[in-house]
Amino acid sequence: MRIIAGKYRAKQLFTPKTFAVRPTADRAREAVFSILYSMLGSLEDKSVLDVFAGTGAFGFEALSRGAKNVCFIDKDVQTLQKNAALFEKEKNIFQILRADIANLPTAPKTFDIVFSDAPYDFGLSEKALESLQKKGFLKNGTLCIVETRNNEDLNLPENFRLTDERIYGMAKIRFYTFSV
Image (cartoon, rainbow, N blue to C red; front, side, top):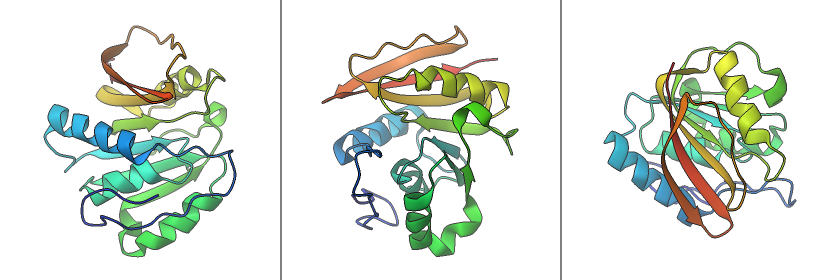
């Protein structure tokens, strides 16, 4: 797995040799960033939250493409920390929170963009967004990008407005705008 574009283009990331982590495919990640650029223009001045971060590929891609800062959340951060070491000179603009989505700390700040790639078929995407909302990670206008299995249903509160969805192989990626 690699960074696709930006100042760290082609930088290789560590991936675990287990099926417990399922990184978003390069093709799908590239498509998500193309959609983000068409929606936002750029990632400059954007704070990004990568939930169920795994390898951190989405967050590090955002960092490479000019995000102001990135926060990673996962309960297993071993691979994430290995990848973070590859970005040593950027360490002041990202942080890693080791936490279970059900027991999040109070948010250090609000975020402009949230990417959530929960394990498929466990209903964790809904729980994650609800927890992020309750703990103060979201603000009016936060763009929430949620990856699920392509046939997995999501039942979110009405303050999450679906603005786009795409299917890439087994994955469905939905774009929601959060409103207070």
